[in-house]
Image (cartoon, rainbow, N blue to C red):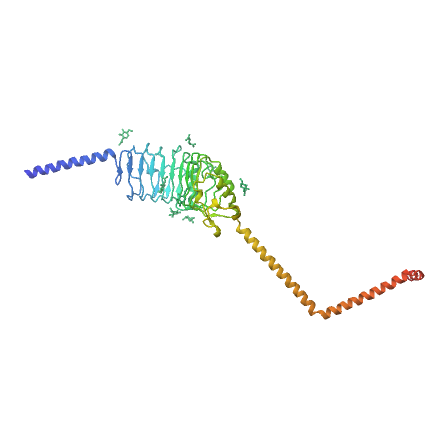
Length: 370
Ligand SMILES: *[C@@H]1O[C@H](CO)[C@@H](O)[C@H](O)[C@H]1NC(C)=O
Ligand SMILES: *[C@@H]1O[C@H](CO)[C@@H](O)[C@H](O)[C@H]1NC(C)=O
Ligand SMILES: *[C@@H]1O[C@H](CO)[C@@H](O)[C@H](O)[C@H]1NC(C)=O
Ligand SMILES: *[C@@H]1O[C@H](CO)[C@@H](O)[C@H](O)[C@H]1NC(C)=O
Ligand SMILES: *[C@@H]1O[C@H](CO)[C@@H](O)[C@H](O)[C@H]1NC(C)=O
Ligand SMILES: *[C@@H]1O[C@H](CO)[C@@H](O)[C@H](O)[C@H]1NC(C)=O
Ligand SMILES: *[C@@H]1O[C@H](CO)[C@@H](O)[C@H](O)[C@H]1NC(C)=O
Ligand SMILES: *[C@@H]1O[C@H](CO)[C@@H](O)[C@H](O)[C@H]1NC(C)=O
C-alpha cells in the first residue's frame, strides 16, 4: 500500500509539473530553440532556416544571428509586430529579400544584415513610411557587383535612415547619387572597401557627421570632392589606410588638409607612391616634393633624344667629309671644269663689254646686232 501511495504521489507531481511546463510555454509563447524575455526573443546559432514562429506580439528585439536563414519573404513575418524595433540577422546565408518582407514591422528602427550573401534586395521590402534608421550591411553583399542593389534600395525605401554601414564589401566605386535621397544621413561607414574615387556630388547630406573611408584604394581627392566636404558643417572624416599617390596632382589636397579640421586622422595619412616618399606624412609634404613622375620621365626622354640627335648629326658630318676626301680627284676636276667654264664665259662678257664701251665700235656692234 505504501508503494501504491508513492506511485500516486509521483503521478500527481508529474501532472503538476506537466501543467506548470505547459502553462509557462503557452503564456510566454517562446519558440523552440529560443530564449525569451517579455520583450526579447533570442535564437542565436541554432541552425534555423526560417524565422521562428510564433513570436510574442510585444517583442521589441529579435536576435537571430548565426543561423542558416537563406531568404526573407512575405511569410517571414506573418503577424503584425507593432513594437519590434531591432532585428538582428547577422551571419546567416541570406541571398534574397522579397517585396513586403517588413510590412508587418512598422516600427523597425535597426536592421542588422551583416555577414550575409545578398544578391537581391527588393526596394519594396520596407513599408511606405519606413522608420528604419540603422542599416548594417557590413560584409553583406554576395560580391561588389551587387552595389546597385543597395543603391536602388537607398534611393526610395528608407528616407529616415541615419546610420549606414557598408564596410567590408569590396566596393570599387559608389554609384552616382547613391546617398542623395537620405536627407537625415549622419553616419556612413565605408571602411575596408576598394573604392578608388569619390566623385564630386556623392556626399551632400548636410546632416553627415561621421564618414569612414579608411582602408580603401583612394590615391587622391579632387577639388570638387574637397569642396563638397567643406559644405558639410561638423563633418568628421577618416581617411587613413589609403594608398595616397604623392605627385603633382596631390598639391590641392595637401593644402586643403593643412588648413581643414574635417579630417580627424589627418596625422595618419601617408604616401604609398612614389617609392622615395613612401610612408611620408601627407601633412609634412613640401610643394617641391610633389613632382609628377610623368614630367620627370618626359624630361629624361627629351634629354636622351637631344643626345641622339647630336650623334646622328655628327655622323652625317663625318660621312660627308669622308665622301669629299675619297672623291677629291673628281672634285678637283669638276672644280677645274667649272673654273674654265667661268673663265670662258667671263672672257666673252669682257669682250662684249669692251666693244660696247668703245664709241668707235658702237655703231659697228649696233649694225651687227641688227
Ligand atoms: C503585452 O502587452 C500587453 C499590452 O500592451 C500586456 O497586457 C501584456 O501583458 C504584454 N504581454 C507580455 C508577455 O508582456
Ligand atoms: C555591423 O555589423 C558588424 C558585423 O556584424 C559589427 O561588427 C558592427 O558593430 C555592426 N555595426 C553597427 C553600427 O551595428
Ligand atoms: C560577382 O558574381 C557574379 C555572379 O557570380 C559574377 O558574374 C561576377 O563576375 C562577380 N563580380 C565580381 C566583381 O567578383
Ligand atoms: C531614384 O529614383 C528616381 C525615381 O524614383 C529616379 O529618377 C532616379 O534616377 C533614381 N536614382 C538613382 C540613383 O537610382
Ligand atoms: C576586408 O573586406 C574583405 C571583403 O571585401 C574581407 O575578406 C576582409 O576580411 C576584410 N578585412 C578586415 C580587416 O575586416
Ligand atoms: C529627418 O529628421 C528630422 C528631425 O530630426 C525630421 O523632422 C524629419 O522628418 C526626418 N526625415 C527626413 C526625411 O528628413
Ligand atoms: C583647386 O582649388 C584651388 C583653390 O580652391 C585652386 O587654387 C586650384 O587651382 C584648383 N585646382 C584645380 C586642378 O582645379
Ligand atoms: C593613428 O594611427 C595610430 C596607430 O595606428 C592609432 O593608434 C591612432 O588612433 C590613429 N589616430 C587617429 C586620429 O585615428
